Length: 382
Image (tube, rainbow, N blue to C red; front, side, top):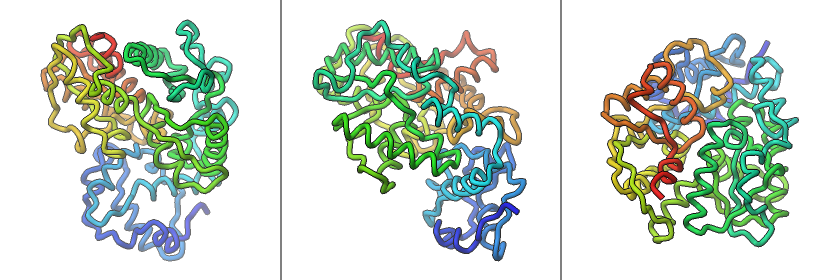
């Protein structure tokens, strides 16, 4: 039988603090469309006696790790972390969805979950003549990430960001084909052993290269480097200063190094990515960039900042369909953007970009709304 030892599990994750108020489930965007019920899961663990059976708990894979549950809990219980631990117990027994298995195996073999060869990781930049880190003493390591390296849509964002950074004279280099997956989704899918191994491998590589400052395209990469790497005591200690690219651009704009000589005459609404906003409290920097672009009118959706609706791309959901595919959260989000009167839906996350663009197509709204990354908008205003 596939089960966890209930009392020890509850003690280690602080579940006895739960007062069963239901705010986690009430706020969970997936609870409205799937069988996922954080409050019920915690209750079942607490009353299950010696062991909590994980057999048939397919709803555990519906969690997007958006952190809404934790952000609304008055007792600071974190149902998301409990769900990830339950996933870990399932993965440890090898009882996982084929798509999850494929993503994990590809990350182990190829350094990315997309089944793409390591030798093609830098193809997106072959015509850009970028500096190889640390050759030439670059100030920053620009960590690209898997989706911007391999996905054609993500590659456009990476190229746009390179042009914007170049216009501001930022000194940076990339790792090219030597770059490895950050392992954020490995952790979210419950593969603790592989995650620890990759943290150790990546940290050793960064230490050897002398990385002191780095920035990322993806909020997921940013979050795992900034938060999760720090918690593990494996090998060398990760010590680099990590920023998301929107923080870098906001600083460059404030310092007068990034100048927008053009304009972007559009009504823009901004979608806060979960891993940039709720997970890390970065709300103002993306808006500061947009508000500094001539001609751009920023419109806020009702659900913004801490209340932003998840796009459903996190927590390994890019590889899974879920217990009730139905209407994707991204489709709800696109409808909210349409209702705002905006013509551009901006974001700053590769997962959000892909899910929101797909939602626009599903809603046949291509002529009314376009999805762009902030880096692409900034490039158009140079």
